Amino acid sequence: MPSLDLVAWQLLFLYRKKLVKSIVGLLNQKNITIPVLLYIVIMGTAYLLFPPNPDKITISMDLIMTFRIAGAFTIGIFWGLMGIILGYSGIYSNHMKPAR
Image 1 (cartoon, helix red, strand yellow):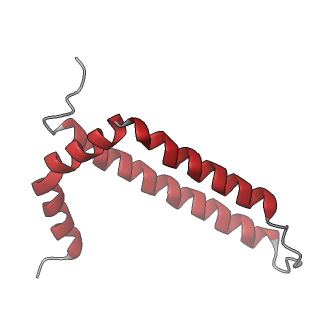
Image 2 (tube, rainbow, N blue to C red; image 1 turned 180 degrees about the vertical axis):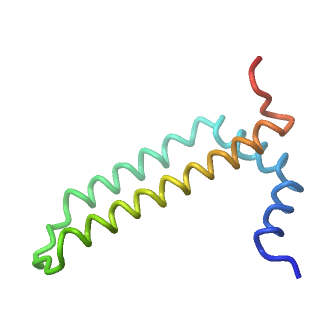
């Protein structure tokens, strides 16, 4: 029985042209800036209006920094892999050819 990651890769290669076409079409629309700006305004307002945490932090800063570093590292790996995968699928589709 194939694992889910192999099925996902197969689906990606089957539908990559349709996915790239829909992503490129979405990015070419002018209305994409309104949701992005709305998100920034909502998150900025929430950040400024919520009060700070009144609870005292009782664990060591070493543990907190370890989790922050590990989190930043894994987020970097995730977005790096997403860029590689989406870049690879975009380059090899018919709609996004590399400039020469």
